Structure formats: structure tokens, C-alpha cells
Length: 291
Image (cartoon, rainbow, N blue to C red):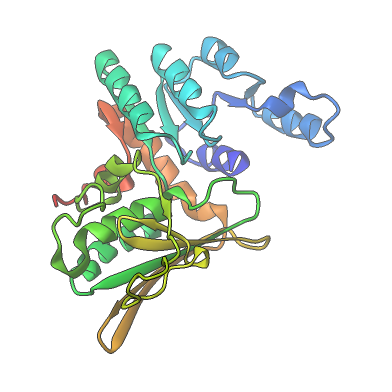
């Protein structure tokens, strides 16, 4: 994702790329590193092997990071402490950690964006799913990603499940659905609620509903979520709604990581105008709805 962000920022006339960070820059044995560093150097862009070095020397206004939930919170805090506004696409960060980052950002008067998905199409999917959920009794989600994605289900799928579960069949706040808001932003409030395996039916229990087996995925907000990891995929989310005699399917596909770049650039531009943490593109686009 880093290279796509570099190209997107370099191609934006109103933005200036001042530095690039990668652990690979300290590995002189990597065959791609000299080429990439040379390309960046020819454009006057400094490269760093640590976030601290970049913040101290390049002095950016905004830092974009796509890492993992283990290291991302430290990067976000480093950026805020340096007076830099972070934009993150890392998923799987615990809710309490995000709330702490929000408090830090507000105390420092800085904006921060941590969104599960920067695709504008995925944002439209969430808005449409909220409306559709009110007309159906049940729903399931299938999310598919490349085989290098370490977390499952995806952050987008978790947020969609909580969002859909909160509005199924016209419900304002179904038990276990987490936040009952109208966007991925509101659903993100339920991040502390871990997905639970759909448990097998025990002996003697009535089987009037679909018998629950491990192959039925994990249940989030009352919505089963199924994950697929395969080479050749990028990012795909499908929501299947069901009611008596009919189904309704919503699906979004990202065929390349280029699909995330308009959202990333939007966040880079907007993060300078906000204070505190924003967790979805709906807020930045002014599309978030109250529950």
C-alpha cells in the first residue's frame, strides 16, 4: 500500500511528499531498496527507516500509515506528540486504544483519521446497507482479501456487521449489535466487542433455526461473517440480506489498491480541518447519519 500512497501524493498538485518511511530502508541487502530510494532521491524525497527520524527531520504536517494493529498505535501517538496529524488505514486496533488516541488528539488540538476502508465505493456500500437492513430479517457477510492480510474478519466486515445488525428488520439497537448508528463511524464504537465463533447446537437444544456449526463463521452483532484469504484477491465485501421468499445482495469489489487512493487523499486534506479522531470517510464527506 505504501507505494500506491507515494504515487498518489506525488501526483496531487496541492500536496508535497516530504519523506517515506520503511523498515526495508535499513536492509541494504534488499534488491528493491536501492532502486526505490534512488527514485525517491531523484525527486528530492528523503527516506527513513524509522518514524521518529522522519518526524524529526522531514517535519511533515500529515503522516499516512498502513501497518498492523501491533505497531500502529505507537506510530499514531508518535505523530500526535510531534504535532503531526496521522491518517491510518490499519485495522484491528482495540476500541479503548482508539479512545485514548482520540483523547490525546483533542488535548493537542489535532485531527486524526483511522478508517477501516478508504474506498469511496465501500463507503457507499455502508450507507446503502444501513437502509437495506431495515427491510430484511437476516443477513450474512462474506469478506475476501489477498492472502497477505493478517486479520480476519476484516475491519470493514466487522464494522459492516455491527452496522447491519443494529438495523435489521427496523431494529434501532438489537442486543449485541454494538453501536446503532448510521455509518461505519458509529459501528466502530463496537470495536471492543470481539467476534464470537458461531457455536454448535448442543444436544437437546431445539434446532428451529439453522444449526450453528464452526463453518458458519463468526457472529458479530447477530450477523455471521465469513472470511476468505486467497492470492489474486484485493478487497471484496458482500452482504446478503434474506427475508421470506427473497434475498438481496450488496457487493463491493476493489480490483486494485488504486481504489483506496481518492479516499486517502481526501483524508490527508481533511485531517487538517478537524480535531480529534474520525473513524470513517462518511464524516469527512459529510454523509454520516444519526442512528
